Length: 173
Image (tube, rainbow, N blue to C red; front, side, top):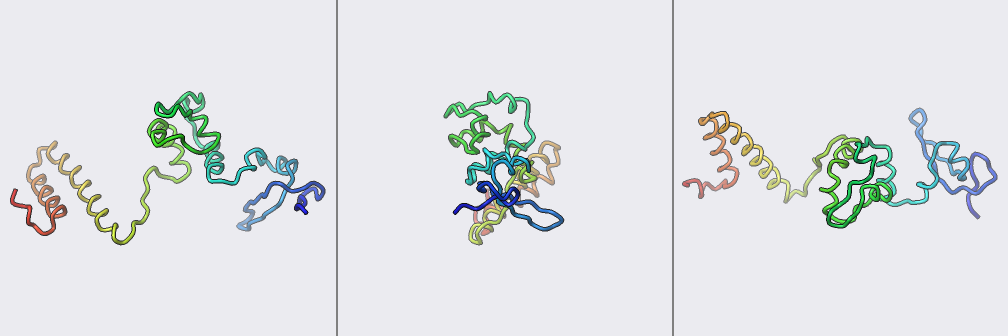
């Protein structure tokens, strides 16, 4: 027997609604009509996959003018950004580049940042850190050369060599 709506207590509940009130979680099973009274978009509540969640978040994100028009599309698969907004999934890997302008504000809105600073498995952590440090040092080296600070550039070059070849065997170049 289907669950009965917690609000009207007469119609079958189709929507599970959860909200936080005064640091307490309140969960209700609601019928479509009562869910709409609570402000829940019943059509979006039908899906339960990650794509549906992302699609819901996209509608609440900051949108650019091109995003509102929905005419941005991927050259590889023909997928429109409006398709991504509807189902929350891309058509191909090239969509990430095609929709970059729309994704940056979305990622910033959802995650607070546009880069992933997660953890790496222990075996991979050290090489990844070294690679990032070398990358940072190379940027500093380019700046030092541009500023004609050749003494600093030489020091940075030496630091990069040590990080890239800690044994010191290739440093005689």
